[in-house]
View (cartoon, rainbow, N blue to C red):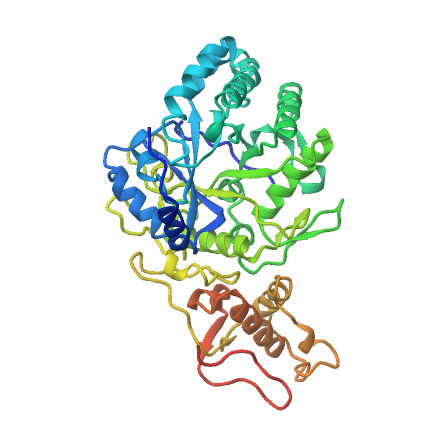
Length: 475
C-alpha cells in the first residue's frame, strides 16, 4: 500500500451588529480556540441536538471553525458572536442554475449568506462536494462558472460578503499518483477543468480543499506497521525515493502528494485546506481498526501535530487548516457501520473519546506516542514525573520508539549522541528511555504521551544519573 493511496469516500452530501464590548468579551472567552482546527457538521441523522446546544458544545472546545454541507440557518445564527467561523455549502444540484444565471447566484447569496453576516463569520463557501469525481461531466463543467458567479455576487454585495472565499471540495480521487509524495499528480480525467479552477483559486486567494483519510489507506493495507504510520505512532517511517524525505505519518505523506501535484500543475502557492479527515469508532467485521482507541489515537495525535506548528516536510512551519470529521455520529447514513461512527461526540453530547479538544485541556498537546484508549467521559489530565522504557519491552520496539521520538519537532536527542551527558550506558534501552521522556515532556505530559505501543511507562522516580539529567518532575 502506498503512502498516499486512499479509497474514495462518499459523505452525505438579519442579525444585528454586536456592540464592541461584547465582541471583546467573546474574543477573550475564545482565547483557547485554535485557528487551524475545525470540524464538520453532518446532518444525516434524526437525533441531533438543538442548534443552541451544539453552539454551546463548540464554545467549550478549542475548535474555531465549522464546515456545513449546506446552510443551517439555526446553527449559523446560534454561532453569532462566538468567534467560530463557518463554511457553508452549495448543494451539487444547485450548481447548474448558479452557473447559468448570475441573478440566480445573487439570489442564492441573498438567501444563504447575507442574512447572517457580519454577526456570524462566514469564511468560505464550498461550491459542491466531490463534483470532479462524480462522473457527471455536465456538472463538472458548470462548477467553475458557478464559483465565478457567486464570487461576483459577493463582491457586488460588499461588506461582510466581499471577503468570503469560494472553493470546492475534492477527495484524493482527483490524484492519479500519490506514492511517493514527490510524484503527486492530478488525474488526467479532471486535469483540464481542475487547471482552470486552480487559476481561479490562485487569483482570488481561495484554498484547494481536499479530504485525506489515512483510515482508508489502512483499510487497503491492514498491517500493524501501516496502522502505526496512519495513527502518528512510533514507526520506522517510509522514505520517498525521489525527495529522500522520510515520512513518519500518512497524513503528511498525503498532503505532500497534493502539494507536489499543485506544484506540478503550476499552482504551488495555492493553500491547502483539509476539508475532512477522521477515524471511525466502530465498524463491521470487514473494517479492521475501527475502534474508539484508534480513533482517539488518530485525532488526538493529529491535533498534537497541528499544535506543534511543524507542518509537513514540503510545507514546514505552518499548520494546515484542518476540519475533523465529524462533530456527531450520523445514524441515518447509508453504507457500513463505520460511516455512522465518525463522531467526536455522541448526539447526547457525551464524548465518543477524549481527543484533547476541550478548552480546559487545549494547551496540552495529545502527543506523538499516543494510542491507548480512554474513558469517553474522562477529562485529560496532565501527568508529572518521567516517561521511561517499560520492563519487558524488546530492543526492536525500543529502537523504533527511539528513532520516532528523536525525529519529532521539539525533541532534542543531543545528550544521547557520542560525547553527550547521557550517551553512557550505550544501550538501546537507555537511549530510548531518554528520547521517550523528551517527547513526553514536549508533547504535553498527558498519560497517552507515554504510551509508545505499551513499551513505555510513567514513573515518579527520577531516572537522572550523574551528569545525565532527565527533564521532568512534579507538574
